[in-house]
Image 1 (cartoon, one colour):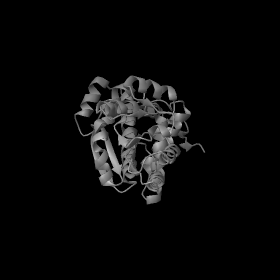
Image 2: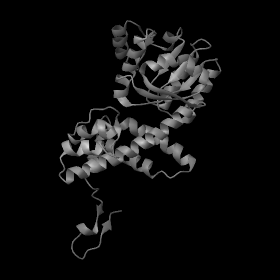
Image 3: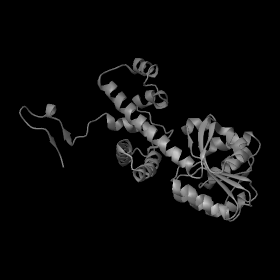
Image 4: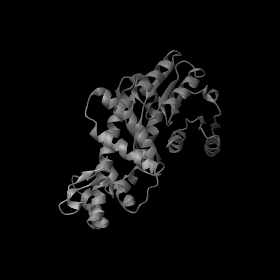
Length: 294
């Protein structure tokens, strides 16, 4: 997602440097856009704004710690990663010691949203700091919403991921049933999209998942990482977590089956087959009792 976002920032004429954990990727993009290829945090020292989009909580904290030592007072770090609320607060505290601002600003919209410059950005942190950088992040945003204090962006993303996971579960289960019942996808999908069942996942992934095409927009391994963060937040809050727990179990199983790098729509592969451990009474021999293996 970072590459198209960088291109949109470049289109505004304000991109100075790009970095990536794979140096060859940073070098290639820097050459394409005629900007600096960063090799360490020091290469961002003259930037007023640094935008992060990394995979793990530890990656955010590592990058923030390095940037804290080189950025000038008054600079701002915007983090588009999906991490825990606590990680966002720790990152903000690390930078605040050096009078550097921090906005936790996770995004929703997937690879398509990044490519089209239409991401939804949910922001936690100081609103005045957001206004200072709004014109830059607006380059790749459909909507930018200030949600509250530091951590509020990540809290909002947690809600987003619960809804996404639940929708994914329902769509994949429903379409798996549609296959079993022999319904024509070319008639089924537009019919569903015209009614109350309409949603982004069905629209963007329905046809491809029925063709067993799982090129990633959002990878299963990233969904599992996000859901485990959400699971912790939800359990600490005391709410029921059945939807989250089922999704965590399903994406963990998908990764075990080798779908980690596949799109989350690969979930349909699980929904197509009932778990062998469950034998329903209707499937058992006449007169036999239903059983569940331990």
